[in-house]
Image (cartoon, rainbow, N blue to C red):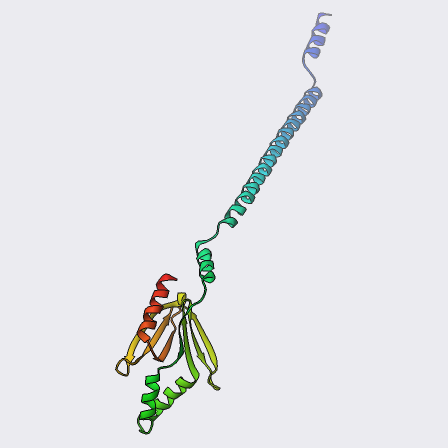
Length: 203
């Protein structure tokens, strides 16, 4: 009798192997479910934080864009002021009369004949116009008809040289893009040079 009671107590005090397996399985499932719940919460908070950051960034960019667009640039304002200034003509006319007279006098000579013909052609078909904003060269020749307009802000440098004992002169205009234009037989070339330099430095 004592041995049977002892066996029953041992059997009741020690759980069976199946019970231990069921207990371990239930604990594992509970741990996994808690881990998945915590991971879901972490992902949800991270996505919410990312969405909040994106929204704040977009709002700041949208607020900064109009402020940037409203600031006018200095070059735009200066160009607008220059365009609003009325254009005043400083000199307008053909080539030098002294060059034409000298060319007609020397035309009968065979050596000076080509230069005389070129001078007469310039006097007939080429005219110059200098304003406070630009210089204009008009060629009305039937073979080379064209008009050249150069704003003073595109001019880098000008050089002049006297001709005919200073009665007229030639001018070379150097542009900022590296090209150059030659103006031959100008009257008042010194005054025109000073005018262009003054307009270049003030434009």
